[in-house]
Image (tube, rainbow, N blue to C red; front, side, top):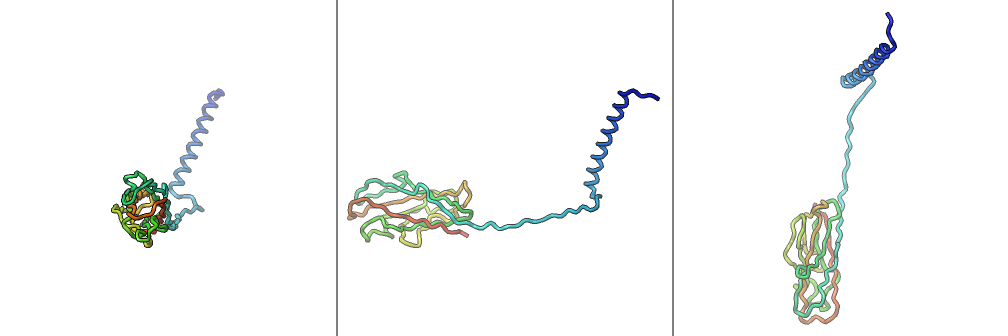
Length: 185
């Protein structure tokens, strides 16, 4: 029996396709049935501990009240000028504030007095102490506790209230507030 070249090409192509398909099918099923010898599989576990980092940054850290007269008060709310604190760490924070440089010349009105007060205006997380409190010279006035480190909720807005004492001497005044950020856990 004589076959034409076209018929031989078709039969040869069909034989190659069946062979490739059969080999692929066999290897797929053998692998899924675990029939291969000399092969081993197992699982492993990775464990680690992420260290907690306590970090905060004061941005827009200056409140400028401008010129004020004796016996007048002004708040950063009225002035639309606040201080923003951001939790840059990866743990919840408690944030306190205290004066490290006095605002008033007369020692009678220096911290802790009603003439320089601070509060939490707004916090995206944690519990905000939204009542003005006298700014202490040590230990700190609690502004917020359990402030989250998540980028979407890690900002705290601080407000300041100043009252110029009735007998304060004239001149430029500047006080320094230090923010203490400590782990809430």
